[in-house]
Length: 175
Length: 175
Image (cartoon, one colour):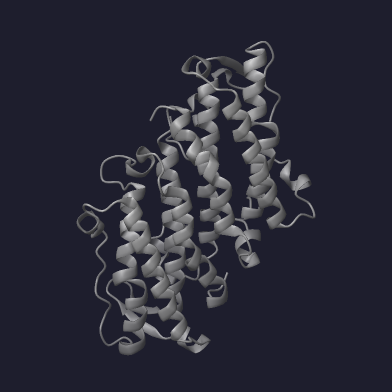
C-alpha cells in the first residue's frame, strides 16, 4: 500500500481515542505490568508516544522541509518516558497525547503537502537519506506497532490463566 | 495475573468500542487487506469475533455450568465468518458485535459467578478438562490477540512505504 495523506491521516487521528477507550481507568495491573525486565508497560508506551509527538514526527518533518539533507535529524531518545512520565497518572498522559496529536495533525494539514513534497529528502542519523513520505508512513506504522505491543502486553498477563488454550493464542508466551 | 471477573470484564466490555474507533469508516484498504493468502483482514476478524459471541464464549460457559464434563463443548468453526459476513458492511458487523457482546456480558453478570464456580470443569473437545475460569480468561486473551492481529495487519500494509525504518518496526515484514 502506497503512502498517501488521505489514507494515513484517519489512522493517526484515531490513535488517541483508541488508546483512551482501551486503557483509561482500567484496573491498574493491565496498564502497569510489562512482559518482563526491560520491557514496557502500556503506561510506558503512552509516555513514549508523547515523546514522539514532541520530538520526532512533526519536528522531523519540519526539519526535513526546512533543511533538506544539510543537517541530520537530532537522534530520538527511546527511553525519555521513564523520566518524563514520573508522577503522572495514565489519564494525564492520555490527555497530553491527545492534545499533542491534535496539534501535530493541525501542523501537518497546514503544510498542504503535495506528492512532490512527499519525495523530498532528509538525513536520518542512522539510515542516511530518507523521504518525507517514508517518515510519515513510519509515523502510522509506529502507532500501530505500539497498539500491537499494548494489546500483547495485556494479553500476556493471562499466559497462565488461560490454561491449555495457551498453545493456540499467539498472544501468550509459548509454553 | 490471576483471572477474576472484576479485572476481566472491563476489558471485555471495551472491545466493541475499541474496534469501532479503530476501524469504522476507515479508508477501505485498511480494513479489507490481509497479510497474504489464507490470512485474515480486519473485516474478517470482526466476523470471527461475532461468531465467537454466538457459539463460543457464553454458550460454552453455560454448557459447562449445566452439563459439567458430561458432554464436550461443540467444536468451534474458525472459518464461519467467510460465509456469515457475506454481503455485510463493516459497520453492520461492528454494530452486531457490539449488540452481541452487550448481551453476553449481561448473561455473564446474571450468573453471579463465585470463585468456586470459576473452578468448575467442562470437557473441551481437544484439551479435555478445562475450568470455567480458564475459558473466561481465554475470552479476554482472545479479544486482545485479535486486536494485536488487526493492528499488525494494518501496519504490515506499509512494509514498503516506511523504507529503511522497516528494520526497526516489528510490525512490518522482515526484509
